[in-house]
Image (cartoon, rainbow, N blue to C red; front, side, top):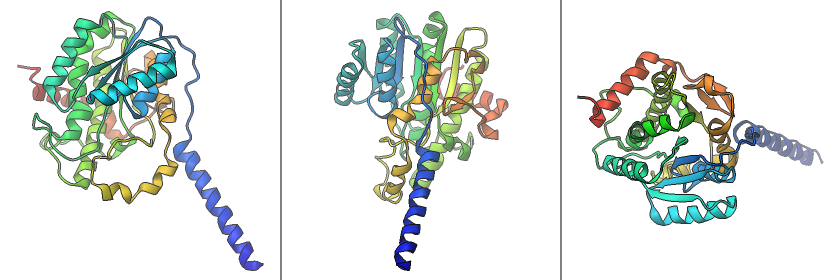
Length: 316
């Protein structure tokens, strides 16, 4: 009997620990507003899966015209049909965009501006956690997570200003806390899982700094921007990385948020009224949160902006 009591106590303790971990990592607030987006156009990169798709469903339900910018045509088309069915909104459109190719970003922006008269909400959501090099010679994480989105935002900014009030959402991560901006190496391809994690963290720090400097440059335009941490979410990001790295921590997925929960802060920053004065800030759990000290460095934010422009040939 005593052994059974000990086992029962141990099981209760384990269940309590699991509940605590779940509430800390997986639970999260929901965006409760009922703001309509009828007549608005939303562009979401990587909207065919994960939190991008969950965000697209919600915004389509609000009546928005939703453009999914995706690399894979077959997966994108499948997502379009899913989102149309779930939202009851037929104005969900696929456009092809490969963020690992800067020429694709430029061609996408040109096609978008020719075919879409409005852009009210831009959500820079697509991301990777993987070592490697892009066709342009840059680190894969740095280009896809930051540099290509920086270029896309630059190319579409006039349309956003024309449709103001408008918003830009930049999906970052709490991993920015471990990031570092070293202009000698941040854009150079990484090899190996540890270097990939460092590159990912660096790119997520770049996301927060991008939002900070962008807000300063947009002051007075009625275009606002927000960096967002969605929480630890069960998504496909990183699946292409070395299998053993993710098998080592597979059990942690139990304590991660589902995509619908992870999308809530993106939806909040895209729709919540009255947060315009918080432009440039970092949001988590549907509220502003203080990011790491390096993410609040205005001098570094400005230097990163100028560095990104030089890499993209946007300055003479």
